[in-house]
Image: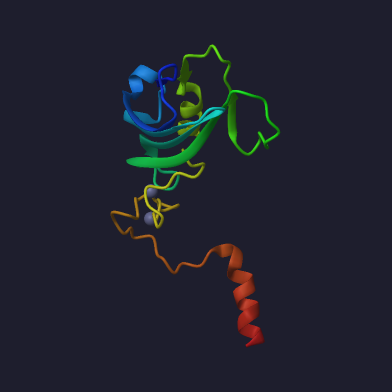
Length: 166
Ligand SMILES: [Zn+2]
Ligand SMILES: [Zn+2]
């Protein structure tokens, strides 16, 4: 993901990349193609690149264990400066350019954002019912015969106490 900047005129430019994840050696859980749309705003002292990144993944649900496919879209801005400045570098993705640089390679930053867009908690759907803890049935697909209202034995004594209080 390289942008040639030597001949780039001052102003706004659009550029898109579509790269098979195999070529990027991204590995699991990434699949298919990484798509990146860039809006490049070049001015005299800086280049601002607004990025819209789409990645496809195959993930494994933490609750029911099923494999599912999901796309993630993330927006971020990369800033390239020709001179040092006192902006807050922690908040922005700031890189520095020298007058001799004729291109910008986005690959490293983009791959980092790709990895960051994978959630810690992976669920095939928000309301995934998961597996029955007793028999292992996938409760999204089937109901099992384990009784729903069987009281957890830990609560037994407390419920008796509650009966007495009532
Ligand atoms: Zn699930
Ligand atoms: Zn069950």
